[in-house]
Amino acid sequence: MHNLKIAIENVSKSYGELQAVCKLSFVVEPATCFGLLGPNGAGKTTMMKMIYGHIRRDKNSDSRISVFGFDPLTHELDIKVLSGVVPQDDNLDEDLNVMQNLAVFCKFYRLPRDQAQKRIAELLEFMELSDKRKALIRELSGGMKRRLIIARALLNNPRLLILDEPTTGLDPQVRHLIWDKLRSLKRQGITVLLTTHYMEEAFQICDRIIIMDKGRKIMEGHPQHLLQQNIEPYVLEIINAHLVDGKLDIPVDHVRRDDAGDVLRFYSHSNETLRQIARKLKSGDYYLRSSNLEDLFLKTTGRTLNVHQ
Image (cartoon, rainbow, N blue to C red; front, top):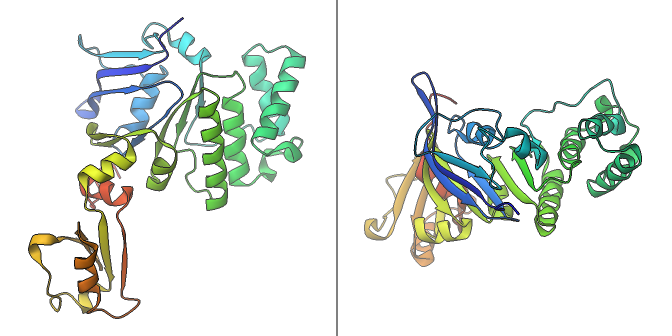
């Protein structure tokens, strides 16, 4: 039986002078969800495509990709047989209805007709789309289309599900539904690999994440552990900061300041210290909260847009 892990070692990808991915290494354990986070242009999608063989990595003697024991350079088809891919863009066939879109892919996987019909019915029920089985694609909402693409990626009972920004542009209800389905898939033994711009998404469903910037790994670990180890636990957000800046007496030794446009944030290990600052402000001018993964992301990658965004 093949190794069930995904192992990435010193992998790079260049396009001329642009280094899209640089010496990236990480390991994905079986039946877990692993997330790649980073700004646009960080190299997340490029790394994903190298894993399932859509893009070839740079040839370096010390680089390696192993997907369940297979190298995509030499066993791309074996990896595709074991994988389901959910791309960024909706690429459903607008001329076909829901069932027909899935049936076409069943033929690609050479599923017998009876088996295909059973699998389609199971997945439509799983993704809560059974009542839309005869609907045309143009009649579906954005969330329904996204769920259908995930169902399509599961037709071949993959061991690995790869999702590139699976919930971008979806409303909160649909996003939470998809998160629940991904948790269920993990419990079924499927390994989930995803890229996302939603920090809450990564925090909710990922067992481990990498934060990338400009093709390089900035940090890696369990989301909760990364928060505990790399950022202060409390944040005071001040709105319309220009009205109060300069009027506050800030204990410099215990507070880190972060300016972002018209919002001023103070980070501290002491909730009481931030409360003392807040007492000098009007209600509605501030928000005292726990730090989150988005705070850590912006601390590590910066608040300014890079040239690829």
